[in-house]
Amino acid sequence: MTARNISQFWEWGRKIICVGRNYADHAKELKNAVPTEPVLFLKPPSAYVREGSPILMPAYTSELHHEVELGVVIGKGGTAISQSAAMGHVAGYALCLDMTARDIQDECKSKGLPWTLAKAFNTSCPVSEFIPRERIPDPGNVKLWLKVNDQLRQSGSTCQMIFSVPYLISYISDVITLEEGDVILTGTPKGVSAVQEHDELQAGIEDVVTMSFRVERRDQL
Ligand SMILES: O=C(O)/C=C/C(=O)CC(=O)C(=O)O
Image (tube, rainbow, N blue to C red; front, side, top):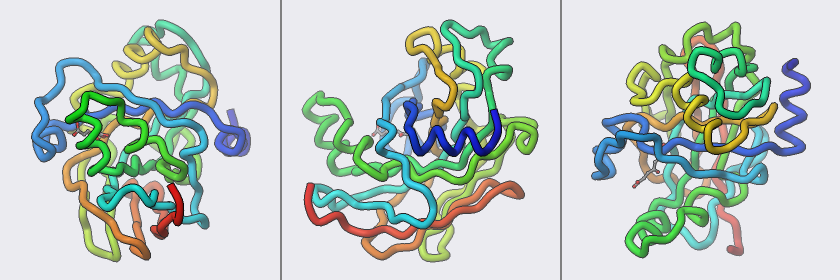
């Protein structure tokens, strides 16, 4: 799959499967137990936003958090993919943000409700350009960072992930068939924090890609 085709998928929309609590330090900073199995949730394709458009903070949250993540772009679909075959299904990568309405997520957690309002709103998944797989030879050794208004907030490496990319592809595809153009968000390292209207977020994968987004407030919803 070419970079051009993949960017079309983002415009047409494919599903986004997210992995929560995949870094022990982040699980602990939110006072969660370190998981023994991947924690999964979904974002719809309408969550994607590309550079040049703002992240729209829903009116119902007063605590919007950034979470910087490595996104794995699926190039060849499959069900019940083995770990040994998993990397053959990867077209490439993207730098992604999992924007999270933390106050709403906490409320949902306390009521035993799903996280949809907190995680799946429009523009909750800012993404970089497509990164062909050759540019990231080892997805288990990728340095990620995020700054808010030029101040470093997150800095981590995918070597800290609890569940590796091949494990996640295998685990997810047992439950949800993966299709060409799907993206797996692999979880965030520690350092998540709140952003405000008019903040500028910059994020990067060291030596590979950078991206920036402005936060604006959405008037309704
Ligand atoms: O359980 C919580 O309080 C929060 C979990 C998350 O938001 C997890 C992630 O999205 C992540 O770890 O990347």
